[in-house]
Amino acid sequence: MQLHISTHDGVPVYLQIVNQVKYLVAAGRLAPGEELPAIRGLAGQLVINPNTVARAYLELEREGVVVKRHGSGTYISDEGSPLARRERRKILIQRADALLSEASHLEVELPEIIALLKERHGILGPTRL
Image 1 (cartoon, one colour):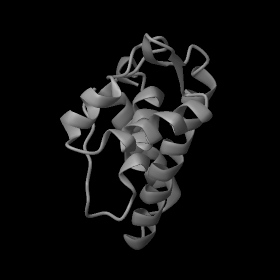
Image 2 (cartoon, one colour):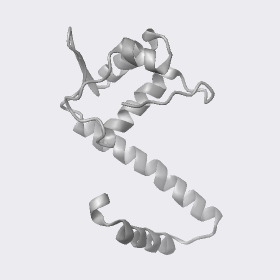
Image 3 (cartoon, rainbow, N blue to C red):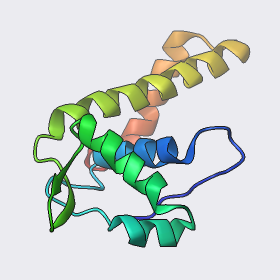
Image 4 (cartoon, rainbow, N blue to C red):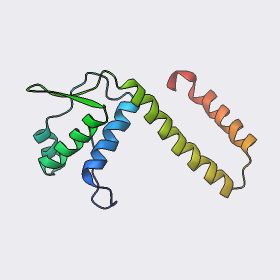
């Protein structure tokens, strides 16, 4: 699991971890039952305080994204699929809003945007979606 932390964007580091893990779950890159790195291991990899990782894991546990198995580690929840659907929708809404905003600035009408999306879908193919 590769996470990237930025100290320059104003978002607390623990929230960056939470958001990135949620994104990885939503994208299907972290599957239910998959083990997350140990707190100390991830803290060492990111060069941050282990308490920061522990706080992120606690928040993920509160949200039902992960479960802790005492003595065994932290795992992606088996019940993560509703979260994954919500997170996928949230991500797509943000990207759709950005596309529509950019199209508005460029004075591109909705039918043209839809046609472009259909064209790109045909090029990428349904197996990639």
